[in-house]
Image 1 (cartoon, rainbow, N blue to C red):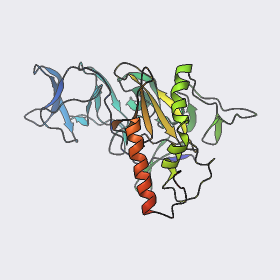
Image 2: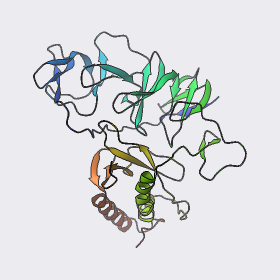
Image 3: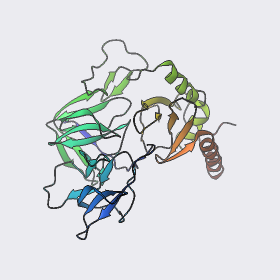
Image 4: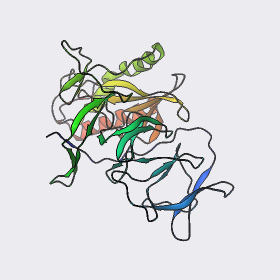
Length: 321
């Protein structure tokens, strides 16, 4: 029986949009939450019992409006948490429930639930993959695993696991991915024991963006692996840089994620970056939240790595001089 364990994490949502109409949350007399505009016109009626700490008049951040809870007296939908609306007050979707709240964004999309099935929506609330499966993992390195006929099982350590069902792998178009047959390329990706074709394609402009990070691979890998407890060879200290999101409405950037040699990326990692649409300005997303100019971020990371090495002189993976 196939089983997938779900690790607990929290990834903050980030707003990169430009000028937006000012919206604010308001709290009704019976402690329900809605949204008004700057003219005090109601955009979304107060109907939500929320669990986050929102104050009356607090500004709405981001490209969409998120309510962290449920409508009053509603029957809760399995695997769904909260509601997402556009900034005009139109309902968009209900996020997939993960850990203690809404699913995080991974490679530019997050999971949502509709009629008990799971799909994917982008940061603007647009559905990019329809809800067709009972469960889908977040995207990682261009692929996501899905199952039908599976269900949740509580484990001894209080986590949950998905068990049973029929499993498959989808690409970023939501299509069934076909494993590589015969001779494999060194760039093929392992997912669930099978290998799949390298999922990314790039224009010349995008290749130039990635060269920026490849040229800094040595120092970035030294920082990334400095606190690993096992001694690693230079080949094992390999990082991969991929463009996982391209400029769109409310997001005028390329996003580059960093993956380790196991093709694993947690988007709370400090090794994720955004690059302006013209390719000239590079920023680090420090712990997934704050946008920092790359040079400033790198100096801070080098300083932190040097201090770590002084405090742990026996660390096996040394910072290059």
